[in-house]
Image 1 (cartoon, rainbow, N blue to C red):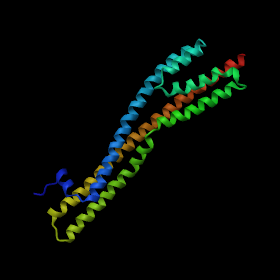
Image 2 (cartoon, one colour; image 1 turned 180 degrees about the vertical axis):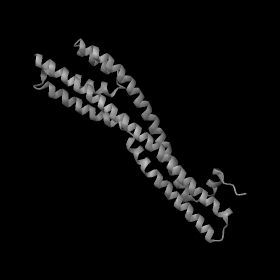
Image 3 (cartoon, helix red, strand yellow; image 1 turned 180 degrees about the horizontal axis):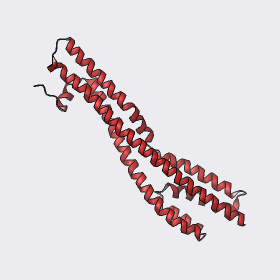
Image 4 (cartoon, rainbow, N blue to C red; image 1 turned 45 degrees about the vertical axis):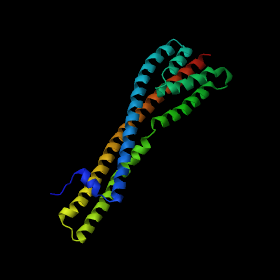
Length: 218
């Protein structure tokens, strides 16, 4: 009886199919790294942002901008805190500026773009893997089938052709598995980034309103 175990199929693969399989495994490892890294970053960011917002409200209510700056420096896992720290720093120099509101707005916008790019780190690669993994698997499948038909042409029976067909199907399965996981996590992380951007925009807008109100009272 022909052995269709993974070890036997691997030993019977030609080098093009082996190289293709190794490439897919490499994509899988990289996807796993990005997924774990983003899960940790987003989780820490959510917890830190919640703590920061709860503390920041008290500082603004008491008009304690120095305290708000100190709180921001203690929550650097939070994108909101990093962005607001830039705004607070810009406003601390308001006496040297002709338009403090514009300075604050530009500082918030500049740092926000940088933080959003940091949140999206690795997502481009994850999206690329989700897109190309099925085609890479299909490429290995085509090579495996070509090899199987070559053996069939040379007079081989199912015992000879079987491993070639099996390795072709395994290549397809691996490609689809890598693509499905990468696509699911890419979509999930995209939603997480969009949610974080909304939170940053909301808090930034509230801070700009706070600055405008203070400046109008002068």
